[in-house]
Amino acid sequence: MNDDDDIDVLPEELELPDGVVDADQAVEVLRAWVADGNLQVIFDPETFRHDVSEWGRLLSDIAQHVATAVEMDGQMNRNEALAQLHDAFDLNMHNPDIATSGRIKGRTEH
Image (cartoon, rainbow, N blue to C red; front, side):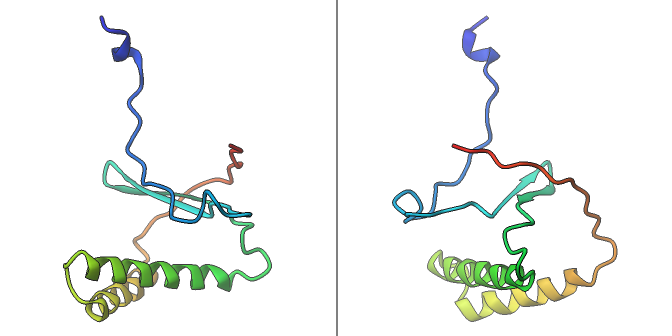
């Protein structure tokens, strides 16, 4: 048996965004994975404790980045992507069949 067989294979992670490593201050606020077809997320609920609506702004900013990337990738234009994202967001925000569960976990210092 090869020693490498005993090592757990970790899932592939995305690279850190430009500017994070050289920033004076940076904190990860959200991580999302699709694992065996299920969405798995982890975030710090205290990130915007002062104003929970900031989470809405964060999700909107993410949608803008996704639409821009989809256009850059040649999938569709930015406005089409934003319209589809908006429609899916509205549909799923009011879907009672979406089950969520979780617990509060701690931060990992590097």
